[in-house]
Amino acid sequence: MGDRGWKAYAVAAALAVAAYQVIPDNPWWDALWQVGIGYAAVAAIVVGTRRLPGRRRLPWWCIAAGLGANTSGIAVAVYASDVLHIDWSPTPADPLFLLLYPGCALGFALLIRAREPRRNWAAMVDATTFTTGLGLLAWVYVIEPTAHSDDMTVLGRAIQIAYPVGDLLLLAMLTRLVRSGGARGAAFWWITASGGAFFAGDTIWVVLGNLDIDISGSLPLSRAVAMVFLVAFSLFGVAALHPSAAELDQPAVRTAPRLSGAMLATLTVTSLVAPALLALQVSTGRVTDGPAIVVGCTALFLLVVTRMAQLLREVERQAECVRALSRQDELTKLPNRRAWNDEAPRALEQARRRGTQISVAVIDLDHFKRYNDTYGHPAGDRLLADAAAAWLSALRRVDLLARVGGEEFVVLLPESGADEAGHVLARALAVTPDGQTFSAGLAVWDGVETSDELTARADAALYAAKSGGRNRIVVARDPAQPPVVPAEAA
Image (cartoon, rainbow, N blue to C red; front, side):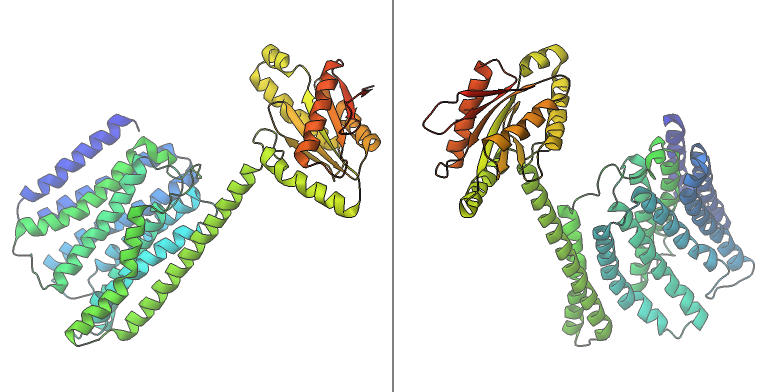
């Protein structure tokens, strides 16, 4: 659906939610208005997902099923209260209300799996940490008091406990969705805001209940709280109708978001919930939830340690990647000048200890500037990459080829004198791609000079090869004599 469709629905839904404050004070009017907004959201999801292929509609259908059941529960609740006069828990509406949580959670889970086919353990730890902290609050202030309440039957207590458990399930999946990779268009934020609104509405009811605040006598206030849920319904509809909903379940191209300052602060506050609860109960002189706080503290501590270990591993992995990239030429994937400067002195020292010969060659592609000017820089880059791959195939496994400049390469040839090194370079010259050639200067180590001096001598031999007509390999005799012997390619 285009921009007009979702905008029209968003405006109509906003007007309907705002008008809820001024409808007649009647339970049936309340139910009619809320059910109308809820079913409109379900219809918007069904219409919005028609543009998606069959299997990609499944997450939205799960969400629509949860919303539809919850909306139906509103009508059933009013009927049970006004017609059947059922005012005790559980009511016939409770199962319908509770279906919201597994429906939305399953929808979120399917979206997460589609967006991130591979498991994101860091995001899972973050979501678990956040849920554990709030779960401890829910246990202390809602679940545990309800479990020991004498005002309800066992089934009634189970139903009432299921609500905060459902909220925690929804919160866990919502947090995991926020920490996932993938597209973050408008639909992503609408659906996130909708899940957050449902959780906020339930939290408001819990807080009011724990503070013994009865808002039923204030029509504007009670309707304002109900409007939070109506907004949540509508936001799901807006998300489904928005064009960016088609990207919501696409596999992640962008990586999962980094651990931002806001997320870090949230996790820090969450991890402090357990000690804060303990301090509060100690200050009142009654520690009534010691075992739960101990379990919560232990779980949060282990989760924080796990997250720290993940961060350390990520830092180590990134540092290793940076080290590797700093020693690798981006175009040819060969070692670069930094790697050469590290490896050449080591190789010379190893040759000295073993008493073996070692040679260094400097290679320069002939007329590379002319090739670039004729065929363009992209073709020149391809030639460099193809030449590097071809030369590697002609060199021995013990040889080291590195790119140290634009079209300039160096080769380290262990355990080889002028003759063997010359044969190896001749093979490389023969396989140079695209009909191109190179000039090379070859120097055999005298056992005394440094790697820089040896390379400089090979570089001088390279210039002699260029002066001699290119397409040849020139060998530097020794440090005291100029390079004189050309070895032309066949």
